[in-house]
Structure formats: structure tokens, C-alpha cells
Length: 155
Image (cartoon, rainbow, N blue to C red; front, side, top):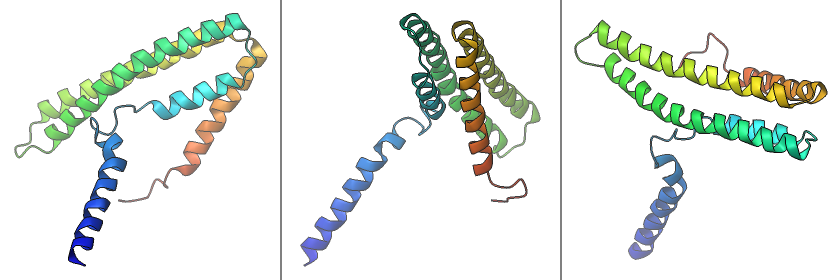
């Protein structure tokens, strides 16, 4: 009976480790832009693109996600440094400001990269295709906004 309990407990821990391993790899946020990447790719797949458009769109999106992946990794590291600066035993405003500026700079680069991707897509997609794309992006924004907790929500 005791051996069965031990085996059951070991089995449970093994399942937890297997299920948690993707999260435990890195900081658990290694693919921070994954959700958006998947959604944008799905939207683009639903647009009737010519072969030439597909080639151009794939190149644009691949370039953006390559840049974004690198930036997201750096962002995670800089956010950790910011948290450390905030929670130091001795408050150092200059250290907090410097860490925040690094986080802010990376977020700015991510926004610019995304804007460049959308500008490049506008150059490839026909106006009606771009209209469909924009409509789906707006629907995603609405969905995400509706899922957020109210502003007065406290943790």
C-alpha cells in the first residue's frame, strides 16, 4: 500500500515536470510574441494571396518575427533587471531610471518593427485584402480589450 502511494506521488511529479517543462525552459516568456505571430499568420492565410504575394508576405513576416524574437528575449532580461533595481534593499533612483529606459527602448524598437511590418504588408496587399486584414486585427484588439480586468481591479 505504501509503495503504491510512493509510485503514485512519483507519477504525479513526473507529469507535472513534463507538463511544466515548456514553461520552465528559459524564463517562461521566451516566445512572448507567439500569440500575435500565430494570429497574424492565420489572418494572412485566410486572404486569397497570389504566389508572388505569398512569397513577399512570408519574407516580410519572417523578417519581423526574427527581429521581434530577439527583442522579446532582450526585453525579458531587461524587465528582470528593472525588477531587481526596484526591489533592491537600498533605493537607487538612478538605477531604476536606467533600467526602465532600457526596457522602454526595447519596447520602442518592437513597436517600430511592427509598424514597419504593417507598412511593408500594405505595399504587397491589395486594398480589399488590406481592409480584411485591418478588420481582423481590430477584432483581435477588441477581443483582447474585452478580456482585460477593469481598471480599478486590484491584485
